[in-house]
Every structure is written in C-alpha cells, then in structure tokens.
Length: 172
Image (cartoon, rainbow, N blue to C red; front, side):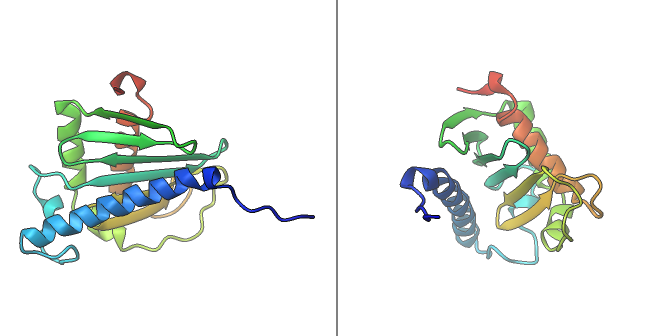
C-alpha cells in the first residue's frame, strides 16, 4: 500500500492553531517581563489580579465528529476562533461575559491544576482540552468518570467555548 504525504492544506489549520497558542504564550511572557516579573514566578502574577486578564487560549479536540477548535482571547475581550477547516470567526465578549471570564481566570486553583499529571481517560470520543492562561497550561479530557478533574480549568474552558464557539449570536 502506497504511503501518501500530508498535503499543505491538511496541515495548515493545525499549524495555525499551534502558532496562535504559542503567540499568546509568548505575549504573556513579554508582558510579565516588562512589569519586572518572570512568566514562571511562584509569586503573584497577572491571574491573581481580578481586574486584569491574561491572554487565554483554549484548544478543543476530539469528540465523535473529530473537532479541532482553537479560541484565542486577548485581555480586552476580543476573541478569534479557528476550526479544523481553517475557518476563522471573531467577536468580542460583552462586559458581563468579560467580567465572568476575568473572575474564572483569577481562580487560584488554576496554578495547582497546571501542575497535575492525569491518568489515561476512561471515556471514548470525549473532548480533550488544552487551556493556556498566561504562562500556565492545563490539559484535561472532559470525562466526568475520570478522577481528580480540574474544576477551575473546566469552568473557564467551557465558559469561553460557550461564549464563542457555541454562541453564533456573538460572532462578528
């Protein structure tokens, strides 16, 4: 059986999504260096101030249909969504939505959830999430049967996906 090489168009959405996540992470690191702290400090960072919002990225993959969605949210509440086909959608959170996301992003549990290693999931066809908040990255599978689910990360990721991907009325 002949082996085929992936076409450039097959790789573009993945490359673009990964690039956006890296850009958001680098931007967060640059911002913290300008303020005199490092992106990996153990002290207070931008997520501890409920008035500020670090760059946030959510990558959702998997599910029965094979989703691959990436949401990038900037500190002003402007978001961009890219799906596996490379289609871009963008918009802005409302004032109330932005306030709720700020509160969720300031949850102190995110720091400990970022340091956890999770066992293999018990679910099939579940969504896998990679949440990046400032310099912290949390990965989890949306499987209620799995032990030690990262509650703060799940709340933030699902709320952001709900306000962007799942809510076409907010798209511009």
